[in-house]
Image 1 (tube, rainbow, N blue to C red):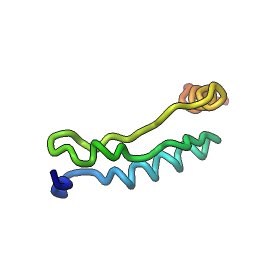
Image 2: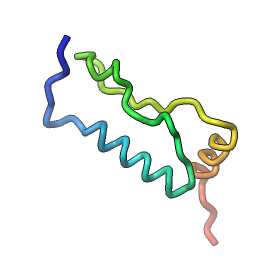
Image 3: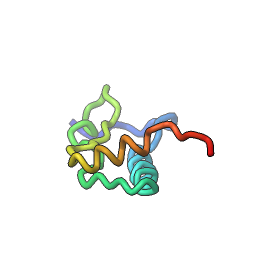
Length: 73
């Protein structure tokens, strides 16, 4: 099975991964296994999946802090 045809309406999953890496880095979060799921890239009817991977408890807590609502100061 070949790689899917590019659809002009599709977003760019590689760009999305790069944006997510930058957004997480702003909050001091690094996900070493963050990337595209290779097997999903070859499925014709499934959008590409982004692999977030497993994280340590410390990283999970950083994600929680980054996602927590901010209180006005």
